Length: 209
Ligand SMILES: N[C@@H](CCC(=O)N[C@@H](CS)C(=O)NCC(=O)O)C(=O)O
Image 1 (cartoon, helix red, strand yellow):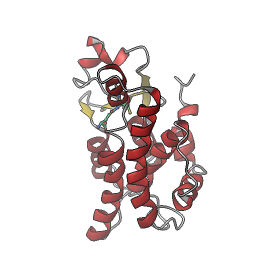
Image 2 (tube, rainbow, N blue to C red):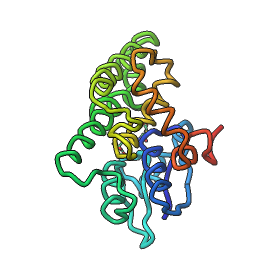
Image 3 (cartoon, rainbow, N blue to C red):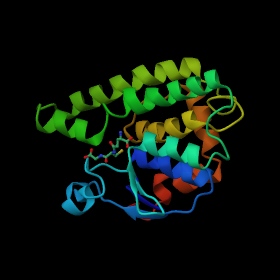
Image 4 (cartoon, rainbow, N blue to C red):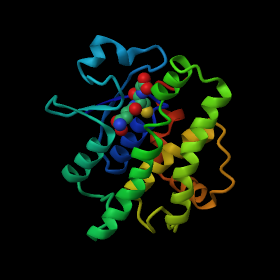
């Protein structure tokens, strides 16, 4: 498989963790978001939305959208599982993952921040306020709900960890104050001791600068 990725993309980071966790070999194809490679026609033929990640499967079919890719990976490579056996608990894990995937990440994404600054004229302080507002809303709820024992959902790594860790990485990069989130931080530190997470980390990617 080939993963079209950018080292600092948190959506691609999710998929890298899952591929590593499930022991699936892949080749990383870096797409540079800073130089606009994702907007070039060559990449848009792969991902019409011009977003990373995209996964090219062994039969050359393309899949986009990290949540679709992660659900497909879970169905096609069920072991080790990233969702609990119990259907209610699967819903719980997905709800935590969706706080990140639907209610934080899309609003704080590069193109949204660029639109705020470029089209709507927000200054740096306003951009930061926007970023911090949405992350705080999501993290406040996650902090109150996750088990952190030692992972989000107990003693097994789950989809919730896979979504949370890249978002925390991003929050720290944007200097978001994490002192009110001891449970989230302990999950972050614990996951970052696992090979699957270490190998997926932005600083360990071939395109890291
Ligand atoms: N919902 C998409 C979001 C993908 C996405 O927003 N990727 C970002 C990097 S994390 C991107 O390609 N951004 C390019 C841009 O904002 O111009 C997914 O989960 O795959």
